[in-house]
Image (cartoon, rainbow, N blue to C red):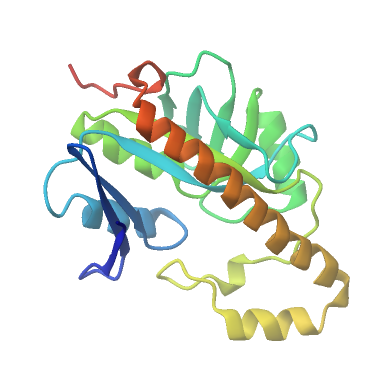
Amino acid sequence: GLIASVASNGSRIWTKNVSDCLWVAACAGMGENAVRRAFVAAEADGPLDMVLSVGWAGALVPELKPGEVRDFSQIIDAQTGERFSLGNTQPSALITSPRVVSTTEKVRLRETYPGAVMVDMEAATVARMAEMRGIPLACIKAVSDSATARLPDLNHFISPAGQIRMVPFVAHLALRPRYWSSTAQLGKDSARAAQAMSSLIIEFMEEKNVDRLNRTGSP
């Protein structure tokens, strides 16, 4: 069965033995620092054979709807300009931003990076850490919000640990009824996206289709 635990650095860990493999899932929050903590926690008991970066992301193109799941041919770090190539032959890029982006920022990213279809806050850091270790990487993201979704600015409410500070966020939201409907819809869409993503993750892990992985320097 699935075993849940909390690592010494605060990351949440889930492990499961499947045949002769140990699956490890790690989560520490949003952003680069959270990814680093989660990655370190995931490899605490030994080196990893492969890495699968998963999570929610915002759509950059109108044809992508909440709940849809994608993998990518490339991950681009918007802050450093680094590009990480993946095994998917269908051209589509995921942009990693250091902050939650607004609708206006989504338009700028789409214009700056032709072929970019989604934006997140973590995948480029996962890719960089996998590349440093020379282990395969794949990336699966589910759309949590559409390209035109108008949501409150979450950046002011993300703690240094990468967690949403719920009390001040709810207080902020309570005074801005124009965001009530879109925020409620975000919760519903995120739940639907998580369900769609979980099915694909299980299928991917069971197949272990290495043709879809980026070798990131491994022999």
